[in-house]
Image (cartoon, rainbow, N blue to C red; front, top):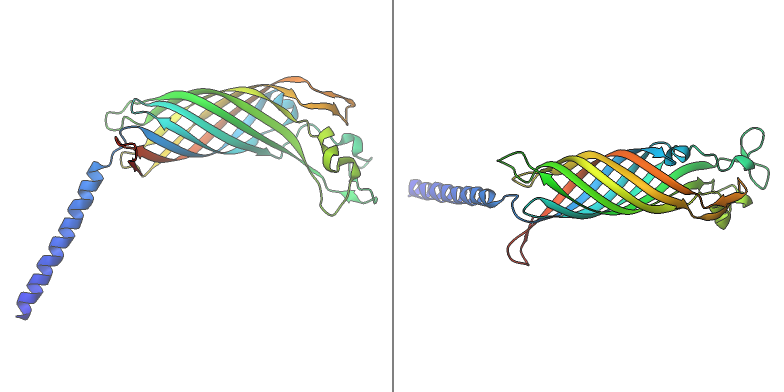
Length: 257
């Protein structure tokens, strides 16, 4: 009797394991990267400046988020937003506040350790296409997009909290920060990969930004002149993007991860 029970347990366990394996294999076979996809994108990259941008800043980094609608024919419509940051500021806007030793002095006579930083945002929309060269994965290949948007950047004056400098207190900073913004044109060329099993999805490539911008401060305190100059701000960079694809089924309420 015991042998019969053991045999039954083994048979049932084997049947359950086989059934689960079969369902798992069938599920994996059903998964594909075909059809329309909503791509949720999380980016990191670096940029080098050109044009008027190079007179003000050095290299910078960016962190961004965005979304693409990726059609079944490999066309792309998308939006993205980037936060730009860097510590290489070429223009010393506080030169007129520095003493002979090169320090900015606080109101009480102490030395203030003030740092200048680059800060900016870039918001844009784009259209493009992925050109596939593989029969086994037609959703991956050369990604080319072009777009337009809005760029804004300024010099962040990062002061010591414990030291008070009235010349750069609150709104007085606006006379030194060189706030600039305007319209941009952006091009991207790189590689887009959407795995057949949806587990690894990313893009990497080069990006180029041309900004037709203008200074937005009516008066710069350090130069004693208007800050409304028109500019050509150029950025040359790379971007690595991790992608979360949301696959849209035939039914409007069917979305597969």
